[in-house]
Image (cartoon, rainbow, N blue to C red):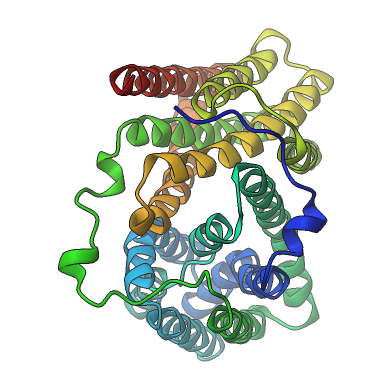
Amino acid sequence: MSPPSRGGASYRAILALPHARSLFAASMLARLSYGLVGLPLLLTLKQATDSYAIAGTASGLFGLLAALLGPVRARLVERRPRTLMLLAGLYAGLLTVIAAAGAAGAAPWLAVTLAAAAGVVPPPVGPLMRTLWGRLAADQAQRQSALSLDTVSESTVFALGPATGGILISAGSAPPALASCAALVLVGFSALTSALRRSPARPRPAVDTRTTRSPQGPLRAPGFAAMLLVVFASGCAIAVEEIAAIATWGAGVTGSLLALCSIGGVLAGLAYGRRAWQASLARRLALIAAAGAACFALPVLATFVPVAAVALLCAGACEATMLITSYLLVDSMVVRDAQMEAGAWVNTAYNLGVAAGSAVAGMVLDRSGAGIVFALAAAMAGAGAIAAAVCERGEACASAKVA
């Protein structure tokens, strides 16, 4: 059973850990390229093919492959650390080629192929950093604060990234903005690789994969699949809620509501990292998932903007703390050699949840209206709460067997 937390260390103490500042700064620079890339990529592909349908398909394929293959890339970097810069070079090169195709024009098949290839190779940042924090931290209190800081910082980058990408496009056009993302990839990952060389917590190359490989992958670790279902359901719920809000109040109001969701996540994440918790990690996950389900149920009961504002502010808080708790659970559920891959699975589950939620919500909206879509978001969050209860029960049973 996960030990109760004695409370998080101060964030100043976390950044004072050996090499922590250089690793954190480099990771934020590398992450910025991911926060920026979405809009420039879509509009560059549209310029290359003169078709939003093809551009949307290519961008969707890019995102799908990036999400699905995330655990594979994380496992590769964990076992072969030198491949991190190789992946970064391939990724930056493909983005540059897509930018050139946007400026010169390209056949639809070529645009889709290039976008798909780019989606195969984005190097891992989040899973790598969360593994490093786990190795740098001296105890559970430091891990809690470090992962809270990391999650909040990552969320902030991804919240600000689209706006920054829009500014770059407004200053010139989409292809140069995408080329800037490619340059940022090289700069960010070069800095991260340099910082890793100096850190004692860096991944070590496997001498013999037959002896260093975990006897079972993270997906077979007790309770891990149930935890991924919680994360998947959370991604579904927030994506469904966004589409329901757009259909009900329009894009302008929804943008403000989503900003409140981000604010709630940042504030709750920072507070969560500093708090002393008596409940086990699995119990915390179950309580957070239940609170999230209650938040998503509020707009079903009263479809008014003020109610939705409160609901999304609190839902953002639940989403951030759910992710932090899931990352902490990775440390306790999965053996050390598979933790980077396991962290990538958490990201994959969330991203697939967002994609699945958007697709299902669109179909339901066309047939049944926004009211049913709000109910669907609550139902998905409720399913996540059930999965969290299963995860907690699994931890309790495992503890009983040990005792």
